[in-house]
Length: 216
Image (cartoon, rainbow, N blue to C red; front, side):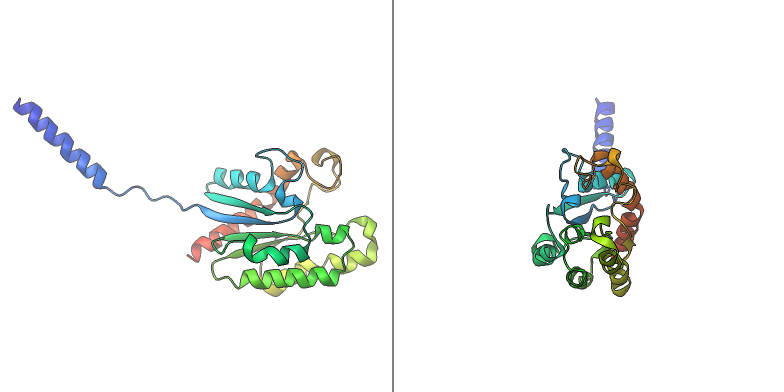
């Protein structure tokens, strides 16, 4: 009986110490917002196949716990993005991926309008002290002609330099023009195409998350 009581006391003390010990610290789950158009929203792909969902899975697999918020709206232009910015992108966002402009080019919107809208979007986001911004570039479709392309294509690099934010030069890099990676409209990536986009942009998203973590 005495041996049993001694053993019980030992187990009780051990359990108490275990409960009192602090839990092992884990990296906090960071918030990434994909702020864009149908390319971010996941037009035409199934559950788990959209850009935000595949990016979240890739970040977690790489050891960077994150929740990627889908703030994409199909058909959105830079004008629409600017109008909804304040309520679409929460102040809690650690990283915001700005992916807008494809619909501007498809509709022939003046590059001056596109530039002004993106400039204002970046101005607002970079003013947030705890938010890192990654700008995803876009290229004018060939049917818009060389004059339009000459005015549209430089916008992203020039604004990235102006606002001192990293640039992923072309969101559809490795996907545009490849029938195997696009849906039947040849404008929207399929699940395999989204995976290519995620693989390409992932290192810069990780770098933005690490910068955010270093800044507290």
